[in-house]
Amino acid sequence: MHPSIDRQVTSLGQLTAAALRARYAEVFGEATRTSNKTWLIKRIAWRLQALAEGDLPERARLRAAQLANDADLRLAPPKPSNNHAQDHIPAAVPENAADNRLPPPGSLLTRVYKGRTLQVRILLHGFEFNGVVYPSLSAVAKVITGSHCNGYLFFRLSKQGETS
Image (cartoon, rainbow, N blue to C red; front, side, top):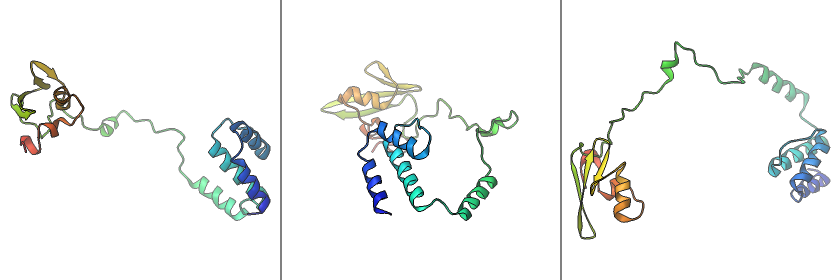
């Protein structure tokens, strides 16, 4: 790179966003709406180098134009057709699909924590602890410990309802 271009590119880092926008307009001959300093510096540096050392060769320009014409470009996402809309919708997970680490609803989880024996009843939609229903085991563990922790780990649940 030519030394004067190198100095100009280096000095771009010292400019404010407003000054970079003015420099961009000066170099490109049109204004920009962005105030992203990094982007402006890269674009101005590229333009300064292209002006000083020459732009792309004609052969490269023709090849780029050829590739752009051959490209199947979409400007908007495809609209789903009515007859195939069902094919693209993922299968819904049933609401009552319980985690495979949990024993069946109605079971009791028992854990000794700080000298107390704690029991949590597994419900179809939640977990009951001390007469209160919680949405997750983590919520129960948080009430017990006072800080967030993984409910499955706290109650030592591993594979298919087994406790470790």
